[in-house]
Length: 196
Image (cartoon, rainbow, N blue to C red; front, side, top):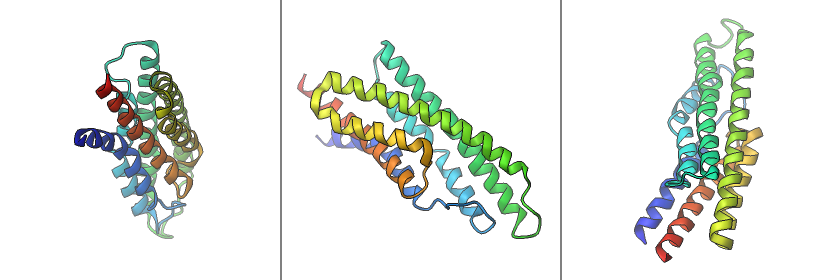
């Protein structure tokens, strides 16, 4: 029983941690928020890919089409959402922090960086949503009603992440829902395997 709690906790941790960190996410990037913006995204660099890993591992040991779709979606999320954090978070935060307050006007090129970063993140978030649909539907089909709540949490969290990033309050709640969904599905998978 303890190992089932530990496993579910490990699956839930990336989403929940990212959600909690989102509480500190500034709503706007400016010289007074730049250092926190930079530091938050630098830390997120090590957490965001783990969300994709948690979703992919829910299909561990399988080689069917659904598993491949889920793993590819999770991989695309991990890659493209990390690119968003690197470009718009780390890069733009670093530049804004080093420009200082009022000394030099913020370059228009930062807007271009935000544009490409946002596009990459948006595609990554859609990929996570597709993976969530596949993983959730498959879990409900295989495990029945006990998989419905965690599957819905994962699905709803992935859906709302597309437009909310990790900004409070909705982005925070989206990430936490993703974490609770992956943790819950890991718990249900493990408990069903123990009964088999």
